[in-house]
Image (cartoon, rainbow over all chains, first blue to last red; front, top):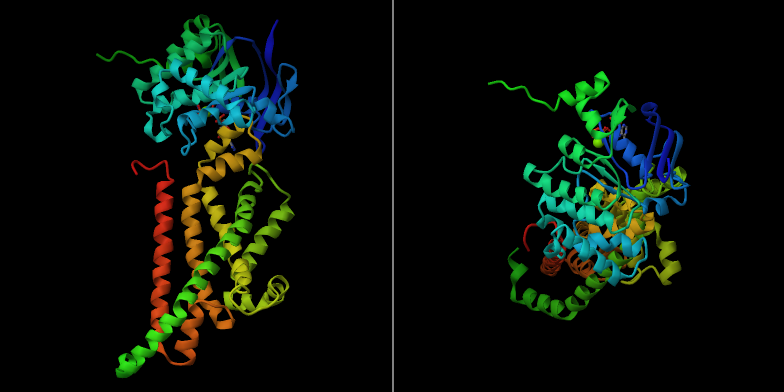
Length: 249
Length: 234
Ligand SMILES: Nc1ncnc2c1ncn2[C@@H]1O[C@H](COP(=O)(O)OP(=O)(O)OP(=O)(O)O)[C@@H](O)[C@H]1O
Ligand SMILES: [Mg+2]
């Protein structure tokens, strides 16, 4: 396929001999939005952490463009700058303001001009409706606002791929929407994204491709409407069934 | 005890307080501040190394080095201060040129305090939420940047509280250093109180020491609070 941006080949990841991802293969095209779903503990977070070079891997290769992502290499900090990651727990720096949180890496790591970084940060905050919060500290924000700031913080680095790990899982239901809308907007703009989520309706709406992971292996993958309406494998059927409720009255 | 407060004793005590106390107070103050400052200069980087140099830290260091560092700190911390003071006489003479006097007492104080500071810094840095360090790593920040721009700034309130503990501990040690040549309030308390039975002078010296501890502690607590951005309101 043309324009492959991220390529994972024969990836094996284990923790102390405990194999989590087995001979994992995945290619992501530029601009593609992939949703990864699967039961708890199947290795979704582990996969994203490997792509961000946060975990040493046992075998296989992960390539961004043509550069190998290796958590132990000297150039890993360069590669990490090209992969944006947003975690479930927001992880904003509590003693820095919203603006300081966002421009820290652009100015210190990417050595960009401070004025320019601030201007971009303000513009991005405006897009997610948080321009009035730029001088607030994280404790003064709601969960949904924190998570949108975390997304802006990752975006301000101009990553080529964005990784989202259950970014709405810790949010109150009424705050989930604002964060998902932010991500939908990113998808519309053509960002390349890998999204781990349990929001099935959102997954249907946002994805180009759905990957169902179980026990560290891709059990089924396909276009969202096919996967959600006609899952082929029994394991995927069973998993999707857990999100449905019977009428009891 | 009747003559503890006799006219004569009061007059004599007053004279000593007026003549000797201001200098002693100043000596105690500057020795405490300087010794703590040097202890922080040495102890802060060591405390950082203790945390980042671990096997799963952000900058894993060779195991033998970490082992050496831990043993050095533990050994220095377990030697009683009075004995340590005598043990470091050669080093004191090398650095200051003499082993008696107020300035000379700074050397053993620093040697006693830096391992303590290193442990305090270590515990401050361990309080940081590991997720925010990982977030900084995921943005491509180098270990050095993470230490200077995330770990240390994010633990400032805790570091201040802990340095306050170090200051008050050093203050206690300065009083002890009066026994072998150090100046300050400790020397006054021992010289007059212990050797010449002027208990009232000793009492006053002790009260002033207590007040100094209170002063350092309340300044430290206030600073720690005002730098903490996680608290609800100032
Ligand atoms: N640091 C670690 N050390 C040892 N085992 C780990 C570690 N991190 C994860 N694991 C194990 O790896 C497996 C996959 O974990 P992972 O976090 O990737 O699952 P997940 O699919 O993200 O699950 P969830 O939906 O609950 O977030 C789990 O069995 C977990 O116990
Ligand atoms: Mg997970």
